[in-house]
Length: 155
Image (cartoon, one colour):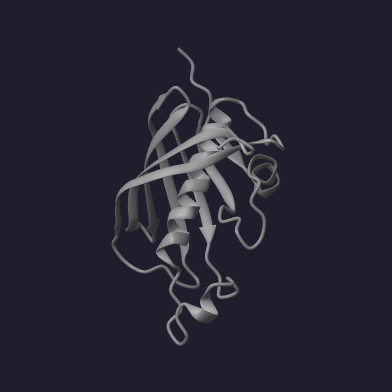
């Protein structure tokens, strides 16, 4: 029985999958992706992030919602590669929900956030993922997330 080697995606491949662009693209590289199972991605956090001047002056901290968004984008990449989807103008993977979100420590400039997501289940196009983000091997955030592909003109 042979297994395929995990995929790696550089920023050019990520841009073909995700509709996000600066300043909201929060995945720099996918280091390991096994369609139908899991993905590991990197977000290099720099002082140039647009949220740092106001969050917080003198003590820059990446907002927790941005950590969650980076994890959600990684989930979207995994879902798209699992179904062999490419970005389609009228279709998007929408973030549907989050459960059990926990923040363990702040993320700041100079940190390299390693995000790991795994598919828990996919029922009728609604995906549920287990996610976590780590910096220097230390857990900074974990959550369960849901997303689904929809035409963006649907209600």
